[in-house]
Length: 313
Image (cartoon, rainbow, N blue to C red):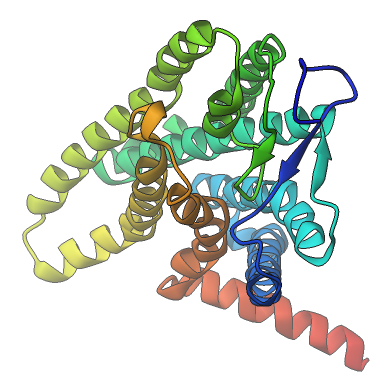
């Protein structure tokens, strides 16, 4: 397994963050707790929005889909990592690794695109409130969501198919918690120039373009807020997009820690940053969106009370 070329039955070894048994036990319980919190939090967000007609608005429609994406995201990587922490066999098959890579790349892109659409929703709501109902019609919201899914699926397919052209020889130990693009390219012994070029080109389109769009949206939102005469009005308006701004900052902050660096400098220390965007961000998003959101508080309360009442009767 440590020599020769890539073959259909080859395997990689997901070594994780530590090979010390005592530390692995600590990591197992830590990641299990974080995974359960992320799953429960995002499922509650989806169920609360789905069960409350008052939250059937564009903003919460996209929020529910963001939670669904985060749910898929953590489920794609964390269960396998938990199994590895409890097992002596750290192997993941070559097809399994590519499958994990595909969903990882696609879901990160989908997260990013949905955040950009949510920024547009906030821009229309604050800067053009009179046209909000017609500008953000259910048909347009569905069309934007489909576009996000199509672009993210294509993005994942492009990079996964390009990875099938790469040859691996020598050590196949991945000192990471999952099969990640940069790590696999570091293990390659064939020419990966095309992968790098496509990664830069598509990355600029999928990530930097939406980021630029979000920055422009928030510049206009801030200008609109500053024109509001009362401090109370300014605070109330800003509070409608504060949660989204916090999630965007967390998403791009953690993603930037990992990917805004040359490939040759990519090392074990980046595993910590990877954990931040792969586990912590999906776990924190439900808290950020529900912490100071009265509508979400009310919807969650009604949903939980309704379920408790059903069980009692």
